[in-house]
Amino acid sequence: MSNLTISIFGNKVFFEIINEIKLFPKYKIKYYEDLDLCVKEAEKYNLLSVFFVDTKVKLSFDRHQMRIFPSIFIGQNSTFKNMFPAVFEEQLNMPFSILEFKKKLF
Image 1 (spheres, one colour):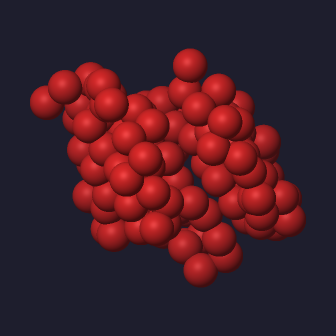
Image 2 (tube, rainbow, N blue to C red; image 1 turned 45 degrees about the horizontal axis):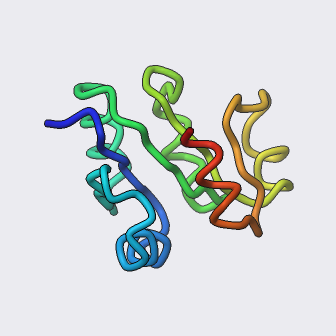
Image 3 (tube, rainbow, N blue to C red; image 1 turned 120 degrees about the vertical axis):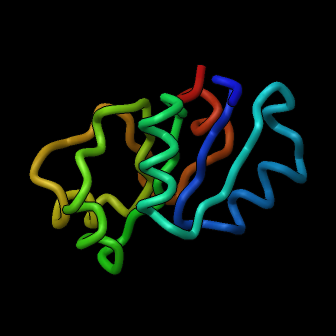
């Protein structure tokens, strides 16, 4: 599998928009509905993973150590403060612009 893959979990609409506007033509973009599968493949292939987080998926995130592979976490600022005790190195607070997202990748 190519190292030019971005895995997205938690927001299918974002995945569809990224594909439609072809913002990252050199990257393969994959969407996952299953967090366990997304994490497993990201760990195995060292993929960049983008996680849309909210309080509904907190228990799923508690089961995983999310710093093993490159990742960006996207959510409401209050969600990060309430769900996770530490601040992530790469996070975006919603709403965000696509240019902010692009800057995080490069």
